[in-house]
Image (cartoon, rainbow, N blue to C red):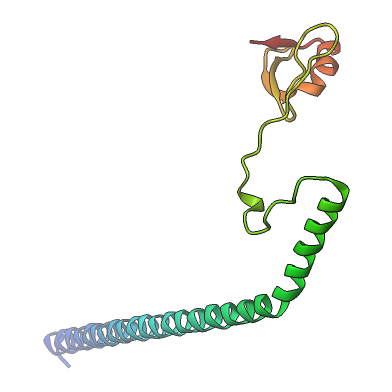
Amino acid sequence: MSAATATIIAVAATAATAGSTMYAAHKQSEAAQEAAKLQAKSTSEALGYEKERDVYARGTEANRYGALQSQTQPYRETGVGSNTEMARLLGLPAPADPATQWQHTAQPPTQTGPPSGTPAPAMGAMVMMQAPDGTTKNVPASEESHWTQRGAKRVS
């Protein structure tokens, strides 16, 4: 076998290997594209099913709630009538209409300060304190004296 023939055979083998590699890559690419399409389709179908199920569940729950309200209405009316009659017998103002009892406007509680005249901190009030090392932190106002005893200072 001559050197030229060996070279031709080697080149042909390399070309065949490259060709089969390219073919395999092409087939793999097509399979990946098909898998992505199938996944997108199944996700879309699952989303549609979930939306349908949610609509059905909301309707079913609304029907159940409406049935419960209609079944308990006589008892609620009896309770309201009893409360109104008890208030009348005791000379108290009539109770609020249950349909509007949650629509009242709440007034914040009036706060009275301690005898020293300094106002009491509001519930949940926070004050800024500076530690001896210079770091600052918001702490509940009720803990201010604790941190002051440990060397912290109140920051305005």
